[in-house]
Length: 321
Ligand code: G3I
Image (cartoon, rainbow, N blue to C red; front, side):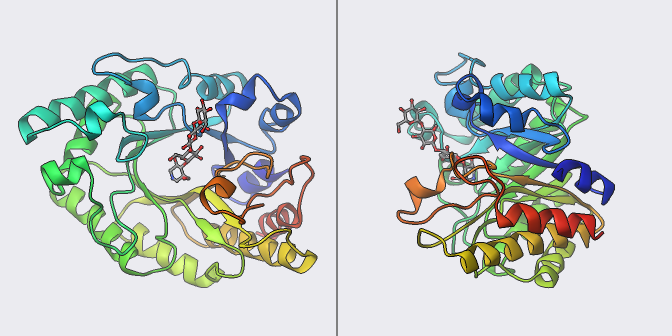
């Protein structure tokens, strides 16, 4: 089982995102989630985001946010917590407000201190800032960047440290795996935070990848090491590898397995890569088809909850360590 193999191979966990709506409605799905030997870590797919936790100013609600942490508690699994300062799923009172530094800083600080206090002691790690970089490697246009330039990074990480000094504080983003302009900018994110004297413990590689275009195990390890050289840990935080067209042929499913093995293998190759999280484990539930029309089947169990070739490839690479 994947988490047991991952732990035996030296990782802290192999885990998954959990869709809140399925926790009470899908017992076959939950039988896999609740198997700690298979999935040793969980993360909320949506429930801890700003629109769910502070839909209007100073009104904090944790109904959705508590669902997955309660699963982790019951099963004794690691919990990753996701996410605090992010331009998306941000309620319009924040995204469309007219702010100055003086008025927006307390909004960020109040959000972070309340949400993190609610989950105090429960999160192995928090994705403090998510996706601050645009796809071309420039800074992402957001209410945070427009108001603070890059100062919102240190503001967020300092607030997080104050709220929970014992959780790992992560910067989390996608397309860092390709060693391109976005990767360079993410290295700069770490530098900016460290130079400001603010705390950062980790960088999350989301790894929303594409079958047949996933970098090799050695290139992936090379990129991870560029970050661990800055004294932060790394993790794959939202791994999925989508087919560009469906249905996937047997050979495409084998390629997908090979791609998953390369990603997991690269984590095994790097001291400081702590674990791998898939962004859902079954093709039954995934954000991919609604975002990339025609693409999908990006996970390691099929939509009937049967293990795919990708599952076998991952188990082999973990067992070989
Ligand atoms: O909850 C409503 C439901 O009431 C309504 O009936 C339904 C109809 O559209 O929408 C539901 O909300 C959806 C929500 O997921 C819950 O399923 C939103 O429309 C939809 O936009 C939202 O998508 C999420 C997406 O983040 C939003 O940015 C995905 O589930 C989630 O997997 C995805 O996750 C992100 C990570 O947080 C950050 N990195 C990228 C990753 C993939 O986009």
